[in-house]
Image (cartoon, rainbow, N blue to C red; front, side, top):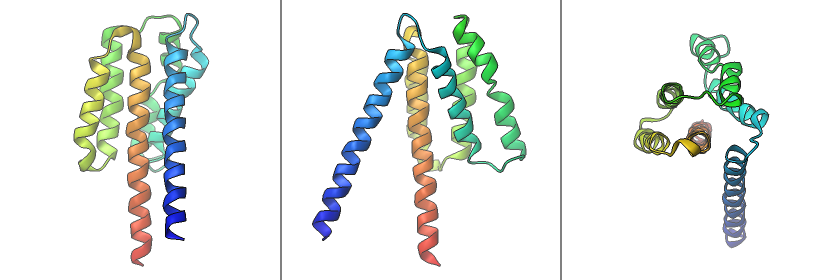
Length: 157
């Protein structure tokens, strides 16, 4: 029975890895195509905002600040009209990773800094796809940590 559980866990992990790889390939293909799907890219940005909001209480100052700072309409206009300049990009990266750092466990700080550095050092042509992939990974880690925390908390009582 234990061998079966390990085998199932291994298969589930392989599926997750393959799905994540396919998702990241789709991001690269979509963002870097001749005619990017700006609606989908904007939806991904909206999803990032909403995932961050899930870690705060609705109507709290943090929640409202995230909604305010992640201006989806402005982001859409900037990528659609190709006016995302270096200053805007730097602000987006610092703001997004700043929220991740505020919400995550301190043990994740180093990996988050490395993710942020990969985004900041990426070539301009691929910075949006690199940003989306790195932020999704950080948010996945944040969600995993929260799940593990609550799972361990539930077993104590």
